[in-house]
Image (cartoon, rainbow, N blue to C red):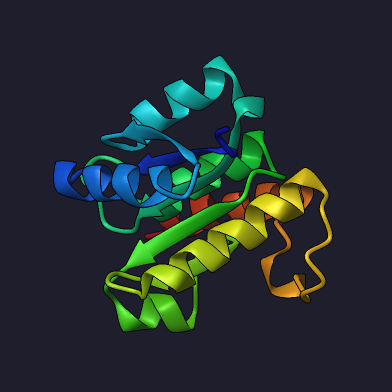
Length: 155
C-alpha cells in the first residue's frame, strides 16, 4: 500500500531518481518535476493528491523559494521543503517554506521531516511539537509577496 504522494522538484535527473528510490522504498509515491513550472502544472491538475513538495533551492527559471511562494499563495496548507547546499539558507530558511534541509542530509532525517509534515497535513498527531513546521497562512503569504515585489521594483 502506498502512502502519500510527494512532489519532488529538481533540475538534476539523478536527484529526481534518488528521491524516487528513497521515498518509493518507504511506500511514498513520488511525482517528479524538472522545474518549478512543471511542478505548478502538476499541482494545478489535482493539488489535493500531493501531500508535500520537496524542492531544490537553486534551479534555473524558477528558484525553490519562488516556487514555494507560488505554492503558498494558492495552497497555503501544502508543506514545502527546500533542499540546499547553502549554509545561510539552512540557518535562515526562506519565507514560504515549512522546512529547509541540507543536500546530503542523513536519510533518516529526510524521512523524519517529510513524515512530520505529511502527518501534520493529514491531521494526525505524531506527539512531537510541530510549531516549527506550521505553514504560513495565505494572508501572510500575500503580504510577504507584495513586499518582495515592491522591493524588486524599487531597485
